[in-house]
Image (cartoon, rainbow, N blue to C red; front, side, top):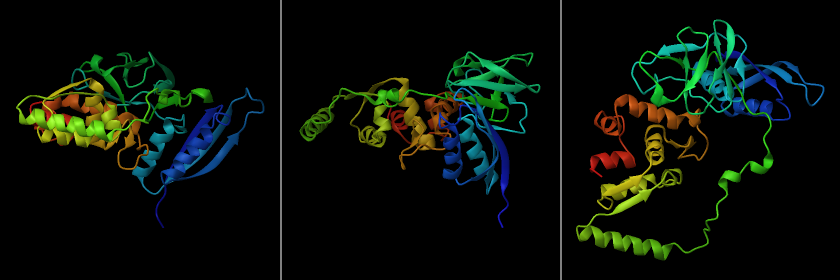
Length: 306
């Protein structure tokens, strides 16, 4: 019989009408775990909070860690909690490898047995503890200084996710006035012919790209164009570099697996961890030279001096 690894977590607030409880239970099952509801108290009125204690089980410590990390973002925290883990930054401008990546939801850390609100709440940051060890605040990567006390891992950190969201705005960010009902084949063939003519005449080709190239799976094709000598100059913002390197290191873009099209475990942290890794190495060129970055658009740009 396989030994079960177990951890008890609790969830409280308006967890029924906001669907937080079913989301947590679904995450546990989807990721190969099982659960038992040890205690549940439902608010009698709509304004009353509810509380549930869940025993989470998995067949390995690694799988249990993955489940706990995922449901943590929905507000589930360990019952037998401990103070947050802290590690000093070992360099300016970058977090320790296992830093806690923040969300835009209210967050608390446990310091000296007490839960303390994290100030200056902001997503895609880390958490720094003040020298006296009694306060915490969000800190962007670029503001980190060697010796700063940075929170690492998930123990001792709890999140208060939004409990209610307007349905009308669920897909608003996907709205776009661009129509896909225009023929593309003729235009693509004309551009390809012009690129071939330009290369043969010894002239240079400039590409202006955004992160959508990576999100839609076109990163490998752009890398191939660079490798075959069709692109010589690249104009792009840091988002293209970030998500191209995220794909190269983690196989995801915006946290979504490029192979399966599904959100990856802790995928929402991948872009920030990719940035942190490159900063720790001293830049993209150094990452290529040290064999950490071995594929993608940025890799080909370094290799072919684009």
